[in-house]
Length: 340
Image: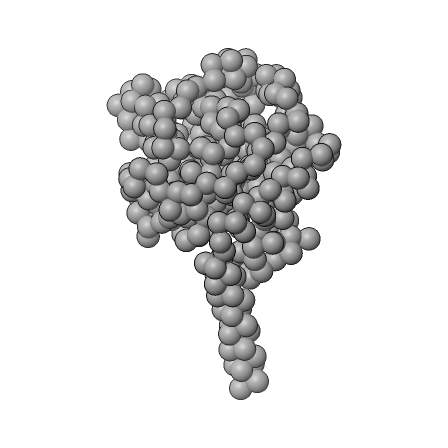
């Protein structure tokens, strides 16, 4: 009886914390949104920690002082600070959106069956993970799983595969996007690690199209140029149950959004995803181009751009800014979090 009452009390406390956070988020005024975004920008724009990714040569040339924040609500209102127009390569932030395309075509079960949903606890480009885990590809937010996801797109040709991936990301961003050709060429010149991953997946029967085709489409996907506002709208689409708040187009069934957010929560920050959830309590995805998008389900998304990364490959200013905003607004999924 004591155990039963204790568990009941814990459930009540947990639910109370969650509802308190949701209630606070619902009561936020436009002025409060802008104020907390401005505060985060001012507080962290001077941070000098981290360094640009250099394993893709062209990323090392992106100005390291660039910093932008965009908070986009589920009804499409944008609250921003800092650099908003600079187009950076989407890189790994593209991964959940291509996973959503697979879900829309084939259902969430296809992701579990043909890729997997477990975090690796290893770097995002790990080849060792393919040998350690029976699923091989493990989850769609690391390179192996993302290449596998591209290979799963229902397509008749490489052009068809690319167009579906490209058009899906453009639909999430609510505008026409361009591939940054210099980024694509730079990545393809140093693609040996991902080529090894694609060939290993194919060898194990966990790649579902030609390895070179899958590799090219995946690399081109990562080279799409977006800005901070675009990324905020993409995240707000997930916050709005799969409906883009700008175009009102449904891109993912609302019943499937929780599965996608769960993958983002467990693997969106690579091998520091646990640390991220501990601090922010928000499903998110990061990329080595300097972008991050975090989602507050049913409320809004926070997107940031800043090129200097920490050792795990995550934007230093971006993660600090999102932690601050989430903490100030009390919107962590598990209750208000100070972000400390």
